[in-house]
Image 1: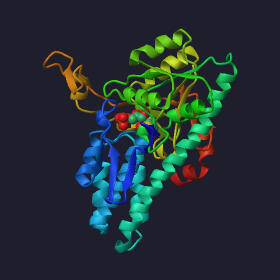
Image 2 (image 1 turned 30 degrees about the vertical axis):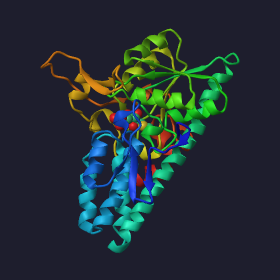
Image 3 (image 1 turned 60 degrees about the vertical axis):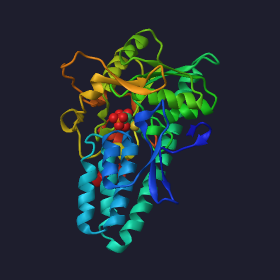
Length: 367
Ligand code: MRU
């Protein structure tokens, strides 16, 4: 997608320097900083500190981390060490483990002398595949938006709500929940996006930045506003992303997603989840009991980062000194609250049958 009229992916390989480049998302939307990721510790820090974030982007980054590890020491032992080291960075988004498993199982049978080359090619492939998957999610989600637009008066916008940033910054390109939005906008369909702020890390500000750069009309709202807007008929549909979706279609996503799904259900608003297949955890059925929910630092809740009047980026402390803060980063929306899953192959029910029908070979392989 475009930043100041230049096309960017959220990460890219710098051939001249032989290094992965990322956009450090901690400073967005106020400062666009690009930086190399050049050591294993740097990879782990970048994921843990959310310089890179969003399930698909975490997975692609980890694949480049495996490539770096193999360039340094392609032994069997280091393959396991690197897998273990990177897998501990964030616990919830399944794309991390999916990418690491794919790298390890591809590299293990190869002679060590071939591993560095193949690992880098595989990281490039995982990044490119993500772009293709999201483009197709966009095409499939576009059909839903077209259907809603067709029932409206000409020029009347389709009003969506989204939570967190499931945009191009959270993937390699396009985004998942935003891909249908970008494609609908490009197809000339009038849209308006309600952007949840998404406390505590305010990923909604990233979404607002993306949408603004693409010319999509939007309004930034506090997380608590969505239910009210739905009660007053101001939201036609919700599309969110996911960090891990179970084989029965329970959706683990950014904290607060569940409340939006409840409000949507109560108000008859369609609630869709944009789901790339690498985000399905076929080993888990019940999302409520079996997904590890990341607990992040208290400081993310107590301290708010923003742009000061003098143009510097700083933080403000909100609660009284000494007050403890809790920071569960994700929640689980049960499948009964999900209208449908928008995948790269099409739209399916959020159910075991729906997912197995869409991805029979993956369901069978998982047993
Ligand atoms: O903590 P984050 O910012 O990594 O969480 C991101 C989300 O929850 C996204 O909604 C999810 O990864 C889907 S991104 C296409």
